[in-house]
Image (cartoon, rainbow, N blue to C red; front, side, top):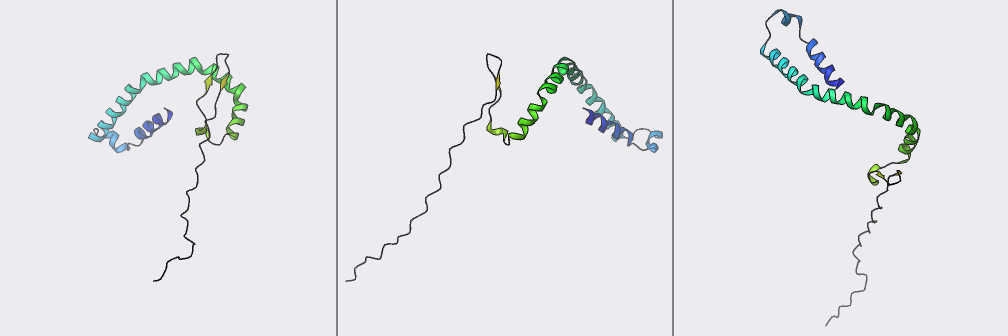
Length: 124
C-alpha cells in the first residue's frame, strides 16, 4: 500500500509548474480521475487491513518473539519446502508439518544390447 501511495505522490509531483498555471490537459484530468477512483476503491481494503493489524498484531508480535529463533533455525535447515505437507494441528494442540513421501527413484533406461555373437550364417 505504501508503494502505491509513493507512486501516486511522485506522479502528482512530476507535473511541471508550467502546467499548474495552465488549464489541465486531458491526460492530467484522466490521471486525476484514475487516482481518485483508485483511492476510493482501495479505502475499504486499507481500513480492513488496519483493523486486522490491530486485531492480530499483538498476538503475532508475541508469536514471533517466542518462536522467531526456532523458525529461523528451521528455515536454514529446510532446503525445499515443496517436499512438505501443509501444517496440521492435532487435537492436543500440537502442530506438525509432515514430510511428503520421497518420490520413487527413476530406473535407468535399459541400453540396447549389441549382438556380440559371431555371425553364424552358413555359406552354401
